[in-house]
Length: 174
Image 1 (cartoon, rainbow, N blue to C red):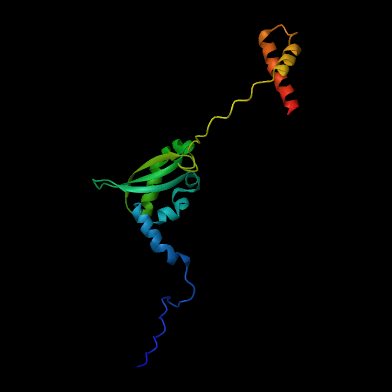
Image 2 (cartoon, rainbow, N blue to C red; image 1 turned 90 degrees about the horizontal axis):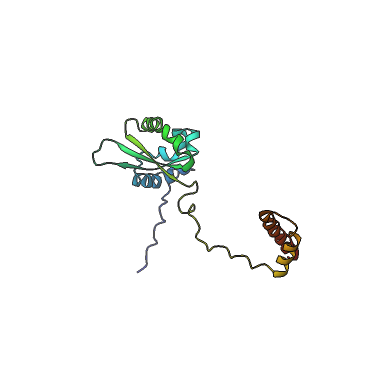
């Protein structure tokens, strides 16, 4: 009994020539956007057009949250710390622009959240050990600096000149 050859696999591509990249990423972007509350992904992809170039440079939409009462959503916008006051004064204008994208009053309020311009993880302070204390100065260098500044009558000025002399003499040895 001989086996029949399998038919050639059917192509899954639609054979319409080149397709725009947007058609391949549209569904994944929509799924990610909807998981963060963005029903209209244009708010994410065209934020500079929605908010304007000046606001888009210092802000970014983070999420849209829907309250229990259903009286509109809350748009959370990430703002660089220094620009928060400027954006705070333009929140109402920003809310109107976003609602124009949706076509109805979908956003009832805008909340600002601040962070470093590079984000929370990258903007954290480093917890490195304190730098090591310099080694104690050489007694010969101290004596030479004190002898040089001994002619000065003011004690504060004398101490400052001794410290300067120690620094200069120590640097020359290095």
